[in-house]
Image 1 (tube, rainbow, N blue to C red):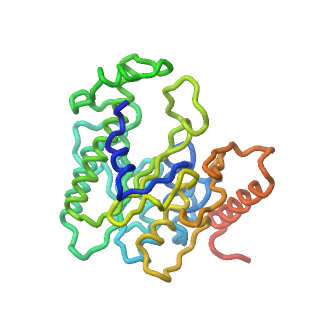
Image 2: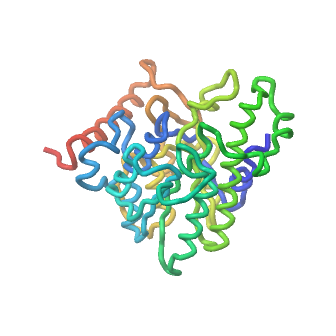
Image 3: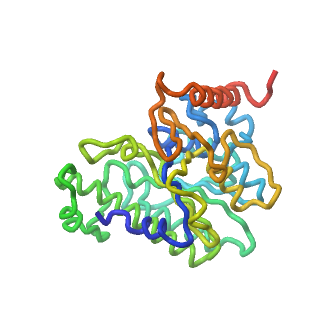
Length: 330
């Protein structure tokens, strides 16, 4: 429909690789933040509020691993610092800096925070001040592709009539639906513009593009599990090879830290992860209710193979111990 042309260009580039079957960490944004930042399975414990998250660093934390590799770590959020304790949580877990809409003046924003364009403008300005030899790891969490869908996407160039003409029969063609689709277009546009600008400043930048969740936002009347629940995962930059992954590759948020370490870390660098990195062709990945293997997604149930169920439960058990009892085993 022409909604995500920028990301498709990146995904199909000779300098890109993508995981065909990528599971989100949960059904909401804070689940994704917890999973990415902590590297611990979703058990409904909400690491962003647990005491041990503020008493020490999780060794599986993406910020912790990147700091061991010599990177300055910066977390950017298009919303406000008080939302779900995100500012305190990320700074407690190895992020040197946290920046959000509290700091940015943006008339185009809404109750959730600033527009994606305003957020990326702040990041570009920050990057322009980075020292030449400084290594910086940025995590960027945008908010605009989300209700109340108040961005003037038509004023930004959204081809509403063209998209409407391409809608399938099972997607509503009312203006409300088109405006929501316009915000997907806007998210894609602003990300594409940012990648171009950042790459023009630092040609060796590695980009990882993924989503927090998808299953609460649906347009088609009937959807299979993949369409409803999967998210993108694109690696893009000089040196990235399309052959890294194939049509049967699977992944989840807990693997991103280890995968990045494998890409940018020196030979022999060691790190802690509850799941193998994406290069090790892991048989099973999972989230709060699904698991994926051999390029296919399944719902966890009483009928799930016992070996898979035991693996998932063991990972959750280790994660729960670490979150609730700390890093001491007695």
